[in-house]
Image (cartoon, rainbow, N blue to C red):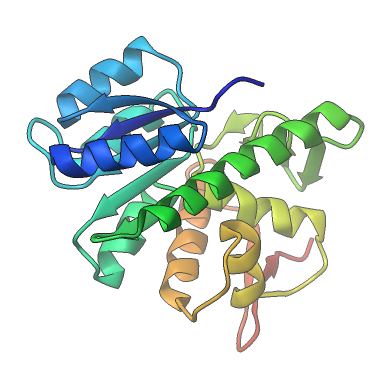
Length: 232
């Protein structure tokens, strides 16, 4: 496998150059963009393994660019922003971003987060290559571990990476009740720090997307404990 290709979209030239230099020194191949519009043009013209997007940019915001990328790609997206409010982070994670880093950040932490997201891709590809049990089913839902696709009654539902990982966890253990800590640490690959709202928003989003296809219940809330697949 060659160098992972990373799209950097950041209008502050000093931060953009700092991130690019650090990632390049760590073996990544970077393409720099200095506005949301330029970032979209570069995204359409090249194949990337991951994108790092600033939130507030001229031409197109990080939220808008995330939405554009998600129309055609499931590559990991890391948002960087001076906004530190929990609601801002939750909203971005629920609309397509995979991670969120508050400015000013330590570039070493950014590199660590990049490596975590790329490791998820590698692990997913390895699981698919192993074959055999790459598909999980529950009721009228099918999850394909090799393609990261989920279908309900034959219709694909578009999920963020964390939403997909949550469903994967449930479907791997269809009778088990998972605490919010269990879910967070599996889906985000980080230690749980008590952000209940993040889990609640992602579960709600999954339910909403399923409800567009069927009224059947797929996720149960177990009060005081957590969540599980609905009993059949």
